[in-house]
Length: 214
Image (tube, rainbow, N blue to C red; front, top):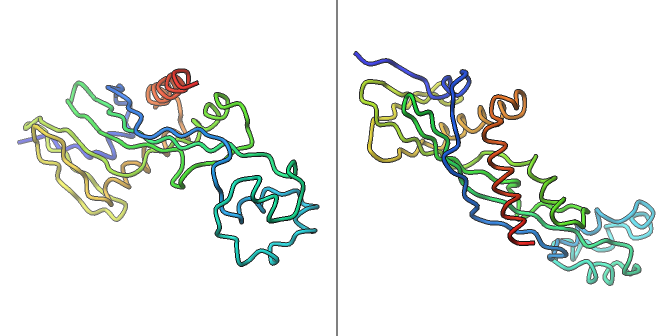
């Protein structure tokens, strides 16, 4: 007879996970990349928004333009808009519970959009500020080899999925991956000390990447 473990319950218990690795897949930190004209208009001062109502530019709101081009279209001075800093960080991490043993391969990103924009002009500080917005999302792959333990995933609709012991990773169905990342993100937000091991590893890897770039 095997012991039964629910993956999502294991994650909420006081289990000593550790970070095996963190990898950066995409890193963008650049100023004044083209933005939709709508986004540029949102960044105008309230006074200029009144003087230059969005209705005047409906035909071009989806056009992607630089800050200088946007100022020209709006008919305002070039210093009316500050070029934004664009940040996009995506990557993967593997966390491990050695005693089980169990490993989770997770994806992370700071935004689902092409990039997140900020008015912070110091690139290092801009990235440091954005680390707090990192969320786990996307695919979840589970490495479970122990044949004496039954590992089950339960999604948000209480549907069950048995993770069969295997020498390779098992990709969770999308609904189960979502349930897993939601729990992990909730823990990181509400009781950050429990997952400080991951937050510190993400911070160190990302800031190390920044130092190499800049």
